[in-house]
Image (tube, rainbow, N blue to C red; front, side):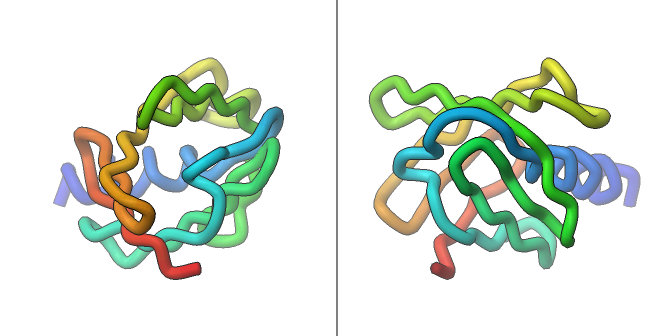
Amino acid sequence: MKLKFTAALLLTLLVAGCGGSPGQLEGTWRADAMPMTITFRPGETETMGVIERVDYATKGNVVKVTYKDGLMKGSSINFVIQDPNTATNPMYTLRRIR
C-alpha cells in the first residue's frame, strides 16, 4: 500500500509542465502499475487534472522530464522509449493511448 501511494504521488507530480518539446513522449499514456493517465505536452504534463510546468531534454531514446514547480520542483524522471507505444522508468511502464 505504501509503495502504491508513493508511486501514485510521484506519478501525479510527474504530470506537471513547462518548457520544451516532449519529443517521443508527446501524447497521452497510461501507467501499468496504477490506473493513471499522463499527458505530455510542450512545456507541461497533466495527470488527474493537475497541470505542471516541466522542461524536457532528450538524449537518444531517453526523455528527461524536469519539474519546474510544485512538490517535484527541481526533480527529474527519465523515461526510456522502448518503442513508439512503450516508455519505462524504474517505477512503472507507460503505454501510449493517444
